[in-house]
Image 1: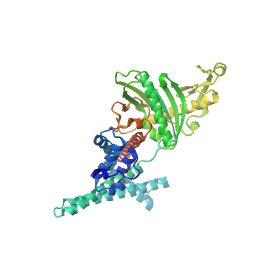
Image 2: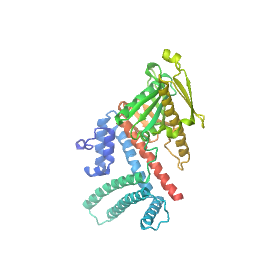
Image 3: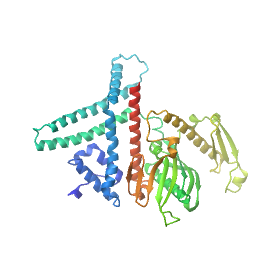
Image 4: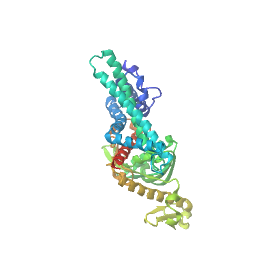
Length: 435
């Protein structure tokens, strides 16, 4: 009987199954949440037969529901009610002409209107849930009626979570960083010798495949290889819609646990670090040409007469900060200058991000920029076929597909973005209360 349930149409992957199961509009497909979870468990076991179905289900399902429930909890708090009252008052005053502010823009008014509308739907569903709860507590209600009420209650619970997520996305505005279409990823081998270099190369390949699936442009700028197809360091430019927003929380220390290729007698732990820097769409806005000095020099390494006789390498220095970048990868000087400009602009922009993050009022669990570089973010355990994200506190199987930039990585990226929105929502409401 249980195996006759399906996880929903078109759910051919782990991420698709999760998204289907947490979408409140699909709640009516099943009699209740219990059947909902059974259906997802079946799909999960098909996707990852080597993992324990119940353990993996509980981990992913809890994470999927946790953020919606957290949005709901924050939006039901007294501070949130105060925030909405203030927003509604500003909107009514502006519409009636009673507002004394002449600097209110049409975009602000539209934003306030959308917040009020979304919160109104959310608050209305909370009221419906309260009424159903009272009906369930009445002794005179018969068993059949209570079953119907319980089914309605579960549907409304899911709708509340959906409206909470929608309201949160309206309250938290997109920043200039959220809409950046360019970023730079730097991969560096860490502790572990040759095995660390091999893992750094595998990480770079994983994110390249992930970028290709997203339709992004992947351009290696600097690559220092090692033996056995390992990687000492690589710098890559990634360009595409939402590239920085999706990749920024991939920065940090990635740890791998497996039997090394070079020594089959023991389990080995090694690390590789990933850095993600925002790249401005227009480099000249961040760094005008008058703000830098450029020195030409001859490159080292293979290249014949082009290396020995021509000054193709460049060193670019930012005058006000003293930050310098050195670029030798291209055979032509003008191409090295372009790469140096992009690299320097990304570093300067990252410093601005660090300043913004330092001013944050909350104790962030998610770090962006310089603070993220030393943070252990993920562990890849090949022996147990398990990937663990230490910020989300969840694990999943099918490591092979994950390393191909598959649905598991997509799921982590999505959940980290939701976690970031939750932190920002808390900040916005806290700032409104302080004001």
